[in-house]
Amino acid sequence: LECAQEELEIRKRVLKKKHDSIAKTHDLIGDIYMSMGDFNNSLESLDTALKIRKWNDGDNSESVANTLYSMARLMDKTGLYSEARDHLVECIRIRRMLPNSSEQDIANSLFGMGVVLLHAGANDAGLMYFTDALVSLKSLPDEGGMATADTLNMMGLLSFEAGDDDGALILLEESLAISESRKEWSRVATAC
Image (cartoon, rainbow, N blue to C red):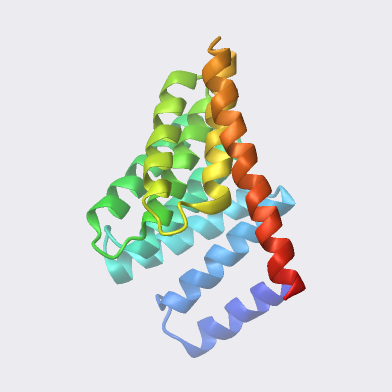
């Protein structure tokens, strides 16, 4: 944290006040504060990053979507699910409209929305977002790898909770198969 804060001070002296490097450093500091559980300072840093990014790039840029995603994670951690949902709705809207957004980033945002809705007790709506995330992940060249396994796992747990034991078992077995194949691939790659 001290290194990031020192870097921020140097960047502020050397660069223009609204330079993107300053926004990136505020994002980093916000994430560090979040991991430390200092949610007020995290929000302050992320809010500053968002203002700079909107100033530099406009409201509909990938950098704005990234900061909105971080802010949504923060709101989810603090139990402010409505605010988290609002940030993710905007993040997903931006990512879907930008031609250069990666399918992986869209899937991560959809998965994040599923988690927020799950935490808010809206399991059916959460399952819808996990399903959308899975569709995005399956379109990737590696079919999403471990992110797909995580999504299938969440869908399986929600299916089990909803009383669909057979559906849950299928989803959880598929998740486990992907996880096991990735572990084997990792062992082979490490041996080489």
